[in-house]
Length: 516
Image (cartoon, rainbow, N blue to C red; front, side, top):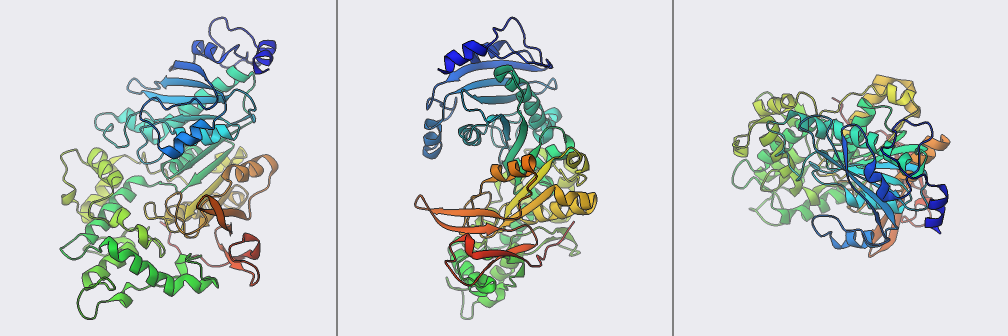
């Protein structure tokens, strides 16, 4: 039936498609899009993928991803290489549902240093009916090894690749369907969160709505801060906290703060109100698995405190981990610095011969901050052009994130409100997620329907004031909780199950953070 419908409404291609046609011609087949011509673009593949038959072109996918691919409907897969500069080679894929398109485009973001097309995120978007697009941001491999000697590639990674892929997708979609998407959205977390807010800053026309989770903006400062914390943790023999002690510390934190919200559930609703002092765990009769030595107490305090200049005490990075993240402290407090930070400093701030052991927070923090000339800062808080177009920005972040400090999101959100003024109230929202790690996982409910929330806001004018998050255990939802707008927290009403979000209300409560 789909083939008959296509034959009835299709127009046979004769030469190149026009990009800016008032009534774009619909391709007779997916394969006809191989002849599509776009500026600085080479279409390298155009193929119809039968239902359940997609396989990533390189490494075999993990089991969960393989199951997701096996459930995909038939779609048109377009692969392209974009060259906005002579040194660019941005790989992009656009996936177009063969039937049931919801008339929307969802661009998806990357994680870490990217270097691969985010197929799992594209699969989720396609399964929900979206035309979707993703990119490797112009290089292969999840590291910054591409950066030395290639300033244009760093620009591609910083912001240009996402814009160029979106522009290309907006040309491919009408070439296939005969009409442009009614709405265009971006959805990403971590690096993808930074990509989202960067798009709002630099290209306010690209998206109608942006979902930005755990945004890794101010990247070079954050990478250097990760080094500084790791250096304090491993400053001397005996200063590091063994991972075997993390559960003991976490239990002490819960004992001190879990019930502050009136519910004992292994989740700290507002960790900024948790005044946990690691000193309470001080060893009294020598080191043991159930206590912290004096050097380890100092290390624990470093995990929970801003990064300071080792000589002057000046705050160099006020972002830090909050109580509740202890089980994941090895992310930045383990025996070795986080690799995302290592590759950043080696390839962007210094050179590949640089020895991480030489890191000196007193001087190298500033060196790292200046090294990329602000490319990865993404710190422009003036989103008025994006808001003036009707754009909406939905931010979210796990309070127990052990990798990208939660203050990255609270600070940027507050900076936008201060910079733009009252207009921002209708156009930006932030939801913090208690007990949630980096983008997912943790004891708190970590899943909510982000796209439904942003669509209702953009298309119907309903700004989210309460979102429902769920937690899945053994394949089943075992807890739901409301997510409240920043500045409010969930409070149990006193009756009914504490695993049912319907028994909670969002109430105002001060959230104590700092700004930069």
